[in-house]
Image 1 (spheres, chains in turn brown, blue):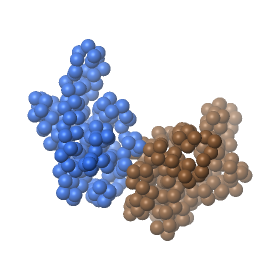
Image 2 (cartoon, one colour; image 1 turned 90 degrees about the horizontal axis):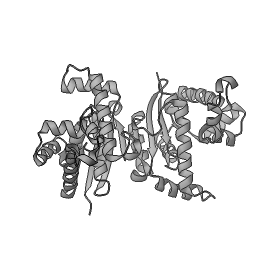
Image 3 (spheres, chains in turn blue, cyan; image 1 turned 30 degrees about the horizontal axis):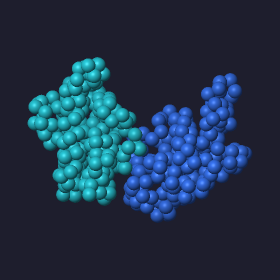
Image 4 (cartoon, rainbow over the protein chains, first blue to last red; image 1 turned 60 degrees about the vertical axis):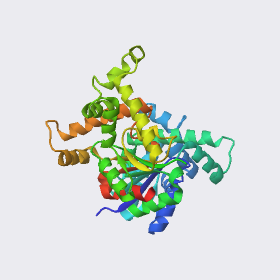
Length: 194
Length: 194
């Protein structure tokens, strides 16, 4: 029998990871997000920073340029290699038992391999910009710009590996605006549906 | 003070209208959907069939062709005229008090005029095809084809008048898959958030 998994895709700064952790705690389930990066690093031999950068966010001169540049002649790119390991890891986690997985295209990877409740968390860019400045601190780059840039990278990465457009309601059982509803209310809703 | 309104946008056959009615009954609020078409017909002088056809579904040789064909030289098209009346009607309804409004771009029309909870209901095409055959009966056209065609028309209409892409999660506070969650569960969720 297939295990029940909550997958949470989320816009950067929307609080999707916090919601995932809170929901997992409420349901007494393991939650995988940063752990996945650590495990990917161990299994691939790359550093965690490299994995975080390449496997989700990199765009300019990164995986996309690499991926689009005659990949068939170059064999498997490091980004594709990471994708393959990530896919195997997520499939293995889903076999172990019910859990919450944040990000990493788990909704797509598990579509035929687990009984998934697929969720998407988004919020207005201004709300997310304010939140990331509060949660992660200020950087040289303005928070509005960081949000915009991460959105672009995440959308490009998701679309490249899944052939789906990022942020379409139809790919998710439930999609919530955390800026409007609040992080705790989103947690409650996900937990009530699981 | 702005009234609280639940707007439900929905894919054809997703049960969004039923969910709207059930939610309104649960909250003891008026629900506007078919009534809007009747009122639009009265106020515009067109028949209800014409309104239903022109103001949401028509595409081939209908409002879109008309709208795109040198509208500035032709004055206001009948489709634009309907849109103007629809907009005024929905703004007036929102002034009257809390309510549920299904369809008719109410989410867009009321974005600055009411305290809206904006919802979107969708479901897999196969689920919707099965449901419309059961609810509306069989027609000469296969249900899968009816779903596909209505989807196209609704998306084109929404995009034309709102400049937004249909079905993007970010435009809604909550988006649900009624085929996965079930119509009653969707009703519960909307009512719990209102």
